[in-house]
Image 1 (tube, rainbow, N blue to C red):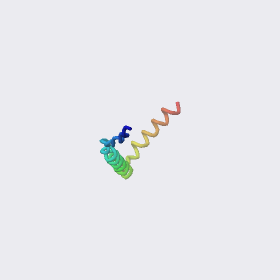
Image 2: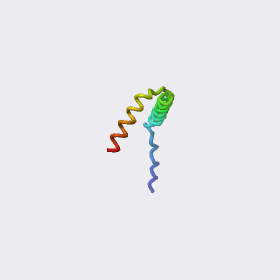
Image 3: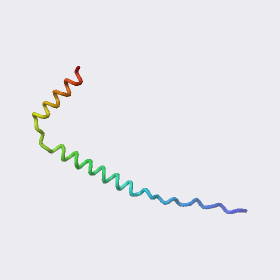
Length: 58
């Protein structure tokens, strides 16, 4: 009677991808926070807002 073969253990070579994804997520969160606390030029914001409003209304 033949012995059963043991299933080969698969080595995961993509473990670095989890760390990389965590790093990218943290970097994204950092820039979102930096953007949210930056000062906004209200004049430029008003022009952009009016332009977008006119573009989507017509």
